[in-house]
Image (tube, rainbow, N blue to C red):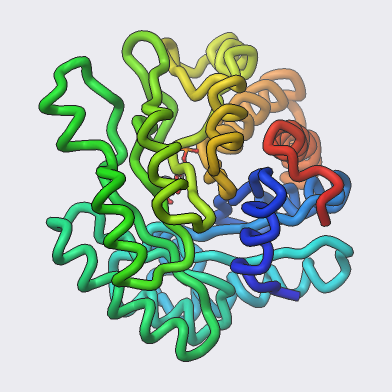
Length: 311
Ligand code: G3H
Ligand code: 13P
Ligand code: ZN
């Protein structure tokens, strides 16, 4: 079932497309992501954050990681597309170890909040452990924050390509997430969307490994509008435009992390279904149409990433 993340991403890097890495916290999101990938004949990565593992395991991280693996294995077994299970933003050594032991395909060590030398040291330590058992590792350089106009601020937040070169060589990390101006959540840019493509280009040139774009949700405006029409308060929500994602892929992004687009779609349609079918109390009849829409947004993303038909 769970395939090697490295194999999936090295093929993407060679053929210059991106694979979606979609976060899930429960069974329904996982089903929607996997069905979308199967219908698009696309390789796919499903990811749990540390918070997702705790949520699934009700605070027990071993149980959460094990349940995540078992859910993915059970559904993926029946599919024809490659599926990998990834730990997103691993910071806690115990959770990273729990994921490795439970059978994850890959882990992220996110020590990007630490100074460069410490990030390097911490990443190297995880790479040594993970590689010993055949698991690949993602790390992050720079901080996920929107680009401010101020040059000093920009330098302190975004990836330094020269550092990326040293970092990848020293740590032997498999994938790198360079901060180029995206941020997590539904409010990514105050003004115009802006990403530093020059930096991205250099990082790819200097490292030659699969690169990851975090905070990459598009926050589709029609979905935001729908959610707001049914009572949500999400005005000002803004994501990464489609043409910028495509440009990032051309310049070497091969894994695109998406969580917010699924969350916002879920909330918009949940509000709609509940308000249009006021006597419905069967959760399956409520979730059914809602997760059909989540599946559609995943398919749309997969098509934009260029991974349709790449399984
Ligand atoms: O990286 C951020 C993802 O959206 C996961 O977020 O920590 O709320 O599960 P979370
Ligand atoms: P979004 O909040 O843009 O979906 O980013 C998700 C992410 O980067 C998960 O690691
Ligand atoms: Zn992220």
